[in-house]
Amino acid sequence: MAMPYSTFGQTGASAKFGTQAFVPGKRKRLNAMSVALNILLPTVAYGIVFWALAFRVHYENPHLAWAIAAFGLLVSAASFALSRFSRIVDSQPMWYAFFAVTLGLAVAMGAVLGDYTFRTTMEAALDFQNLSSYPAVDPARQKGQQLMDAGRVYFASDTKLDFTK
Image 1 (cartoon, helix red, strand yellow):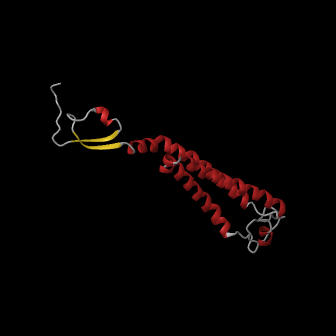
Image 2: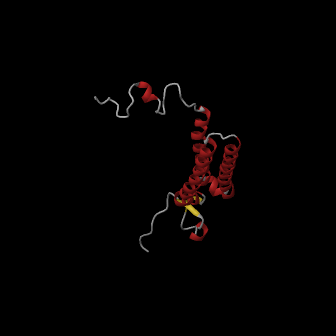
Image 3: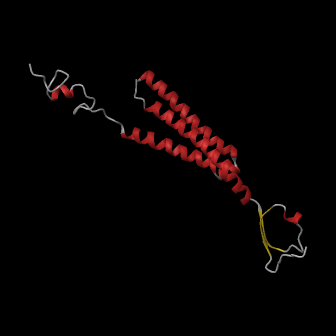
């Protein structure tokens, strides 16, 4: 007896299409708005939290910066609670849970990386930027104690170094 070409004992297209996931006519519908929001909103949340904790907002008003991060985590927790409720009541898809997890991760990573960026680079730069600037300083007339808060000192044009001392 000859062996059939199929090793599963069935031949023909109907036998193959019966067990495959992506069969013509049996497509699962995706909600395009849910897909877009699940990609877009966590990305935007990461950017907002990172911006708030990495730049001038954190320097001038750290409580506001951390409040923005806490609000993002609160929205993530509320979304997770909504996903649990939705699964119990309607047996809805996992969009809410996926959104809650990705939003929570995005906010947490934005907070961690934003604070790290602020501490390692931006804090020193903003400290230097907030120091005073003194133009046309004449060392013969002004003492160093008068310039203790100086970040930038520009000397007068006729100032010269005294190499004799």
